[in-house]
Length: 272
DNA sequence: AAGCCAATCAACCGCCAATAC
DNA sequence: CGTATTGGCGGTTGATTGGCT
Image 1 (tube, rainbow, N blue to C red):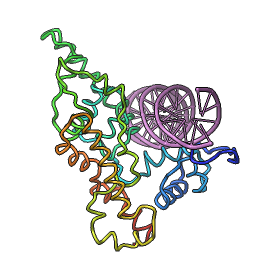
Image 2: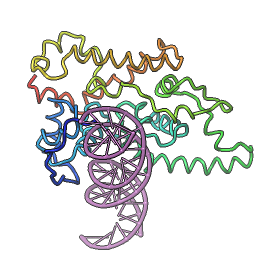
Image 3: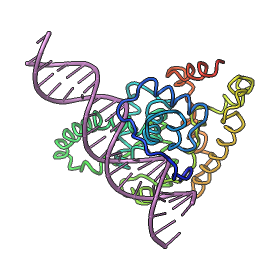
Image 4: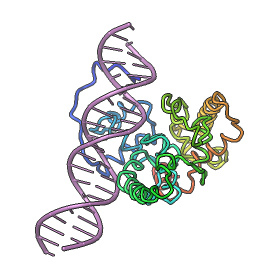
């Protein structure tokens, strides 16, 4: 975990509080150019008076391309509610099934809106409970997969069969997934199409000799995809039905990229 | 217009697991 | 094997915003 010896690392007072546009720009520029092999070295090299954790958080929750901004859709609401009923407040796990949303965003949304909505619903169901005698706890586990996010959850989070009688999350909660998928630095922002095409390979972006050129991207993608498939195979799931949907969901961000300023970021920074 | 309150959201804090030394 | 360090996560805080009186 350690990036380099810290014996000579100067102890400096780290800045706290809101990030300025200038700090954002510095962090963005640095990570776009060099990536983030070691977060603790990012602020030093980027000329920021922040700690590595703060930089990481700012990048993940705000600056990272591919993030969705704005209101949650009904389908996203449904996904969060269902996943929360199954795995509770494992926000990072839930976020994996909502491309473009961060765990922090989902967590905030839960506390500010969904929790209250659920409480309201539980209250009204509590009244009807007296009539039909069904407990709210069991009814909350009667799951129906009504969208693709939940389909992928059912497929990728293990070979569990969610039924009223056979609902066990013990292994699931006990053993966090060791998938390498999330370690891929930039692959999650792009579909493979963008890196298969001549356009990218001929672009100034690739000529700039950045640390993530087309082939490296694909290598990283294929490696992590392989790792992911291994995970799935171990758990006895037919990966033919899993990988494509899962990876499409995780990687297809073109529609978001065009609306969140990433194009501007890319083209602006690299003068394409 | 001013004050109050609740909602929202960015960021921090503390803990833990993984890993390097 | 023990210790130090890092990255990641979930809980919490505090500043800001918007609505209401």
